[in-house]
Length: 277
Ligand code: COA
Image (cartoon, rainbow, N blue to C red):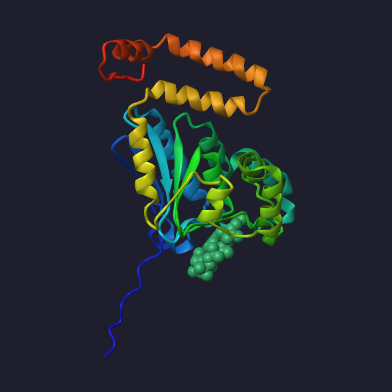
């Protein structure tokens, strides 16, 4: 007689959590946890992701955040089942797009995050999933990862920063081609066009990301923060102003204990002990 096994409950049925967050060494590993929907981002997941980021931001022991999904999907994008706005709701929809929806706010949250955010990508990284990774600082990928912004196939545009961030990462001509055709590219091609920093064996993206965070541990956490500010703001301003703000940020660091410790340790031929202050 065939046994009647009960199918595992979906994340919808269990109510979540849709985000798991765990500290490993100095990295906060934030895992998108909606596997039955390929980690498509809905309001609940976005709210939980923002909360996890908040916790990591103020935790002094966290040097960097690593975002990951699972082997099948980093994230297949925004939850398309939420795209049924009634025409009568245009007034609210417009405002929701800017502020109210958690699925909007979470992208800005990643953009404004003061610590490094590395995306460790395996499997599908599509639409809003790729846009999330693009708001982070860089991507490392398992060799079976696939990337695309396929929104035009649904007569949508990449509306979570993709039309802005992708051209800045890979150049406008290639970005437009990828968005117009919705073509899915391999990890190897993504590396070739500098969409990802590293490609490793399938299943190895998290370890690679953790190894990079491990290398950062010898650097001053305040310097890491200021470098992120200098680069992110600098790429948005004329280079002459960029040089000024670089000087200002360097000067801010000059008031820190860590900078004094860094220089002193070098003179004393020992490893510095940074406190993040
Ligand atoms: N929003 C909501 N649900 C999604 C989703 C999304 N963006 N992407 C996948 N899912 C769901 C599917 O509906 C399916 O749910 P079901 O089992 O309840 O029907 C489940 O995830 C598994 O996806 P499925 O399509 O069955 O897997 P597949 O291996 O055949 O195809 C993809 C994988 C990624 C090619 C396909 O799911 C897809 O094209 N997803 C949409 C990607 C996209 O356009 N993203 C941009 C959104 S703006």
